[in-house]
Length: 412
Image 1 (spheres, helix red, strand yellow):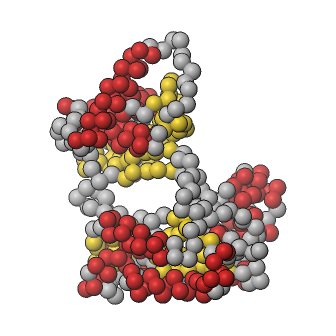
Image 2 (cartoon, rainbow, N blue to C red):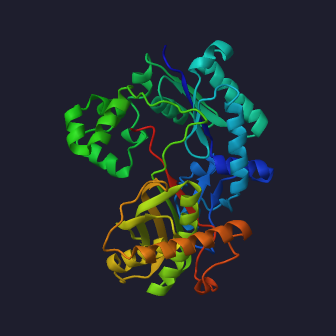
Image 3 (cartoon, rainbow, N blue to C red):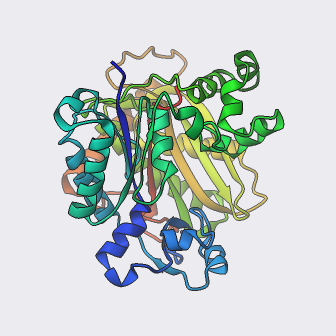
């Protein structure tokens, strides 16, 4: 039986919800952006009206206002975005239990087993679209197809408030003329490489020799080629499915540039509390760490190293992070942003092979101390206990980004 896959995408999600919360914003060129005072003045989302002026997600506010002088900029309300995301999922679950989030504002639905109850995929997609409009007060675009890749391309095809059916009969007419960057997994760098060998649209990608794609891009190149041919078989996972977590990290853009080792170490200490907490909550330990650094001229670098022993202790993570930072970062410029990520994760129940040359007793003391700190903070709040050195302005934004990396279900 041919699969029936839907992809539902909330149109200009953040901006649409802001306009719903404040009807005076409806019809205006609107953007949701971070706090300029904390140096997060980046466009996070924009309305269709702002988009028509060329405003893009990722623009600095000053860049966006150069494009659209009348742009209205508001701060994000993430609690409301999460509420609306949950409300949308509740509607999706009325049609299938195979609902897979793809970000806060997008979901895949496998309704193959539901068509005998609710009609065709197109009928279900239209009903969902109208329900979200009436019950949530925002619009979605829906793609209907026989695989996840084409369902997502369908939701992107007509915006806002659109519905597109991409079938085995019509996908060559709809999908193949699209530019190659429309395909999930093709970013700016991959686009440049593809264009360099004469691949500009998805038909070119579909017709490309598999051997050539593999030699130039590896396994991902093969997958991209297969996806363009309509042969993607990735399943839509049900609501009970949990993908293995690949990494857990936190990052922050500092309120002031950091100019010395001590300031960077304090930020790593603060970040490590959150990374450690998330690792413990998920029953994981990190076998390595990755450090992210962005300097005052916005040049980003990443460094990583394996750990002698897997750990989820914030004390150890912070110490290893600053050691790696000192070894790899040259102080040509001050530091604007810092990130810390635990990588190569394993279960905290995994037996560990001890190293005879390591002071394991010292390692265990640090882990024991850190576990005590974690339990106190968990019971009495994150501000109940900390390091004395952090009781000052360390130029650390408390509204930092929490990063959890999962496998990409679309391109694999």
